View (cartoon, rainbow, N blue to C red):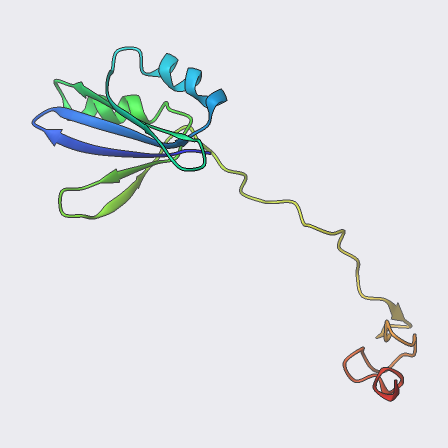
Length: 133
């Protein structure tokens, strides 16, 4: 997925830079930014592209209204060098599915059992059968 940077170039002129754009994402970006002027482009070594778009806007609030509708994570770069994340329509999955199925600890009559030898009262780290091997 690409990353997007936003910064103010001059009075009421803003720029958007799209990094690591894959070929299938290119048409989506160009359709969303029809009124914007493409001011730069290039390639990364891995074959992904860089695009820079700019546009003159009358109000500062217009850019934030536009950016909030974009489906990409956007970071605003300030002149002081500070970076700030802008809220957009992009919503990453808040809860990622676990890599493995979670199993509860095996219990016999309320006690945990060792998964190495199956005896209640200790765990794998303190198992004497494992340590004897």
